[in-house]
Length: 330
Image (cartoon, rainbow, N blue to C red):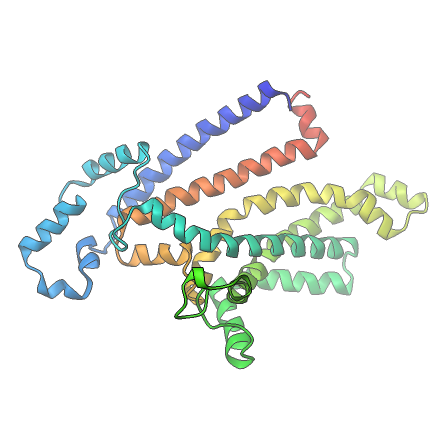
């Protein structure tokens, strides 16, 4: 892609990102302000009966909760533009610091699940699409449709019951052994605690990639150029790897990057089931305990995270697919 077109592409994406963040910020703040959870009660917790009205006023003034919602929004948005996401009421530290610490923990979980679901889903889709209506195709479709309609938390609880309780192969919770800090744990201990949550996310994420790749494979296997290749005596295996896989791979790449939003949502549920101290579990805690700055910060961060994933998919697509380069004027 020429540099001028690439710069134009980045400019368009930047404008879209700004519009997206503005809409997400406004909608998120409105929904949070309409929440039935009282931020002061959630902040005080069990000591709610021990504080006086004067103390409640001090807390409200400390966190700006005594101001009208519109004024609070513009104050928060003004700080956000300057890069100040505020202070978390739960952790009493900057929101960006909390997000940074928890995202590092969630990143390895999502990366492992994302990679595994993408590779396995693509391979299953190729196998099913190459042998349409065969026994293998029916088994793979049954698995994909079952996983697509199964809640993440239910899969997590089933795996937890089987592998952690019955077989005692994996830990029951956490990202490292209880009583130890993250710095004290080795790579294999972290991986041991990571496997089951990642497997939960992968089993769910496989379904969409599998079904989409299967559909593209069937379309490719029934195309004219494949019929011509068969007439020349090419084997099914040769046709699959020389012709059909290339056409099925490009949409799969786009879908894989577009699934980052679903992956983040699934991580919220999986981390709750396994008590995994990542960004997903922090999101639930922020919502339940009325930590408005942290909750809004996570929403903005997740929107940026998903947007950049989709943008990266667009860039990869343009460079891999010659048709997209021709449409871009190259």
